Structures are given as structure tokens and as C-alpha cells.
Length: 338
Image (cartoon, rainbow, N blue to C red):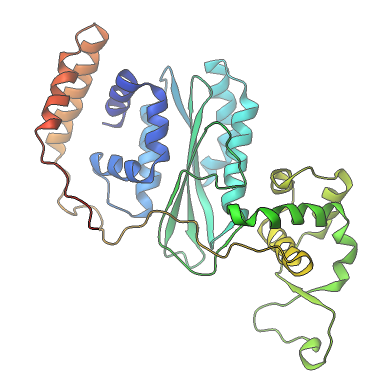
């Protein structure tokens, strides 16, 4: 079914439309429902992208790299294979894949750790990323969508959408309003902030410090896990911008958070404490809701779509036109409440 739908989209609107579908949380969710998967569980993402990767195996103009768990660790190798087959330069695709993963793990500090990462690539070298994180309580999942576009800035408002459950206390270093904090963080690294590491103290959960009982403590409290060795290495090369800092080996979420907090204290740069999530679901259910998948109807629909594609490739597009006319017979969707 997934392969048949993709073929219709490519035939009618081109391969870029498939990328746009994957990058739109609402269209992605609708696509999963058409394929018969549950409404909004974490399995929606992994199963749909797994089905897409299988459906696009050997496709001439589209391919998917990555997956869940260990499969996501093979993304770079898979991109190399795809690039070789399609005659593409792999480095921009590898960079896009790595930056999308780093940003959602380190710059959007929402408490979700990525465990699923996929990138869909077109024969023109354009791409869309769909990845998913699991909350620290392992109770909720959050899906992140990206798409290649002119002027894309990986560290400022880069997402085409994020779907999940909102939460408080999120530090979003990709917010446009955090631009000054991003620049100040780079300046702190390049000015040698690592040399003052002894001025900072880490307070672990529930821990009391001597400074709590004395006045005038000069220590600045930071999160645990700050990698001062990586900060020193970044200082040695003098990173050019925040994107380079995020991509630097060893610079993770705790280090970026520490730099942001110090920049706020030293330079007064505002931080964005807001959840960048844009799409959420009020109700939903597991398989069988609102009704069990009708396998017979799915098989018949798949056969109809494949027959229409075969006829369109021979110059007869009437079958696809018939589907358009059938769609116009459906009731119009209800108006959104004011």
C-alpha cells in the first residue's frame, strides 16, 4: 500500500511531494491511518518508516536510510550506498542526517532521547528527516520532522514540525529569540571559558553544597556532564559558529546548556524556555480504533492504485482522473471552530 501511494504521488506531483508528506506531521499522521496503523502511538513512526524503507527498496528516485535502534547507527553507510546508486555526493546528506540528530538530542532539551532516525533522499539530492525520541520516563514519544529547503539554518527554527505531548521547562536553543545566547556561547568557548572551569560547580539532585551555608559564594552552578575537554578542543580550533559548536565531537546537551546558562549570567542574553512542539493529539487509540483494518479493502485499493499507475505510464491517465473525481464526491470537512 505504501509503495502504491508513493508511486501515485511521484507520478502526479514528483518526488519532492513525497518529501513534503513525510515532513508534515499532519499529513504523516493521515498517511499512517491510510496504511492502517494506530492513531498516535510511538509505533506509528517506526512502522510507517519501516514500511516506507521496504517499499522504496530498489526505487529509482527515492530511498530511505536509517531506522530504529542499531539500524539508525548504519545511516551513514546506507547513505553512501544510496548516493553511489543515485550518483549523488554523500557528504551533504550525511551532514544533514547528523545535524538533525544532534540538534534534537542536544539543542532542543525537552527530555526526549532519540532512538529512531530516518532520512528519505531523492535522486536530486533533496531530503526529509523523520526521527523520534523517547521521554526519560519511557512513557511518551515525540516525533521530529525536517525537510531540505533553501536557506535552512540547522540551529534556528529548523523543524517543519514536531508532534507529541507538550511539557514545561524546555530549553530551546533553536528558537529565534535565543540567537544572542547562541552567539554568546560561541564567544565564551573561543575566549577560553574552559580555563575558568574551577569557578563552576555541579550540583547533583538532592545534593547540598558548602556555599549553601556561607554568604558570597563565587561559584556558578551548572548541570552535570559538562565536557570541559571538548570545550578546550573547540577553543583550540576557534569554532566559527553555533552550528560548528553543536557538530563538534564531545559537545552534548549538558555542555550546550552550561554555556547557555553562563551566557545568560555573564552577558544577560535571554534564553528560550518554551516547548517548540507544534502538533499534538487530544484523543487517540491503539489498533482497532476507530475500527479494525479492513484487509480486503486495503488489498483492493492497492491493486487499483497500482493498475492506475501502470496505465498512466502507458499514457492513459483516466484511472487517476477517476480517483480525483471520486474524491470530489466526499463531504467537505467540517469548519474549524473559531
